[in-house]
Length: 258
Image (cartoon, rainbow, N blue to C red; front, side):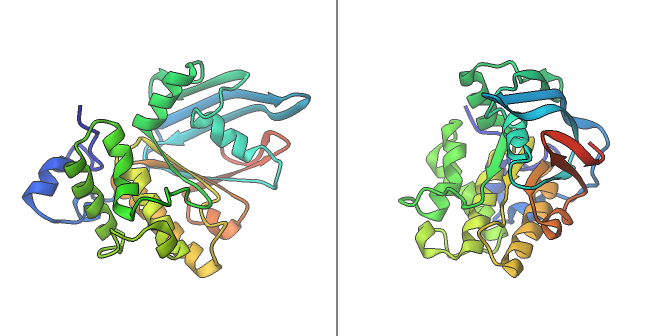
């Protein structure tokens, strides 16, 4: 079984793009305006950890192609919200619906498949596999979905080239700068053509200038790939790159339009 293409359905498939022309991924995927139609919808999310209520009844909508910043101080519940939206944690109460599919009640195995097929992730420290070169880090999610190694490597090479990393395919994470490593993480998040990309403090380990560059790449690339984006951050300058932002405090949305 082949992995989903990182390109919208109106453009050539990943395999044909690789074999027909070396055009970078971004050039094949036209940018589009966010849609008000909800791609991901959460209602009444409650999550407790012992006596601590991390989420106290949260509603969130994420539009087609929209980027959403989730802000709040440490301990506010913003990362727990991301984990529930992304199927990493099941909520104790409430629902999460991806398109028309209820996902909040799925078991661990089904949530794992959901994350693999429909979601992409960018973390604060990249979480790249240190023993693998950049191109294999990017290709790995596609290979896990059944794409042949050759095709996955070819697609990963295109993604790296489109993000300004041509010639660095063989470098391991320790041989990359922080900004370069986060570009690799962005390519890895998008290679399977996810519905939603989740980014948890994606600039937290970077200096301000590099962080702004990573956010430009992250927001532009996800939009061009047709993915929606959720960014958890405490930095207003990072949140400003997104189409919309909400603020979470004490497990509740207290600001912005959810």
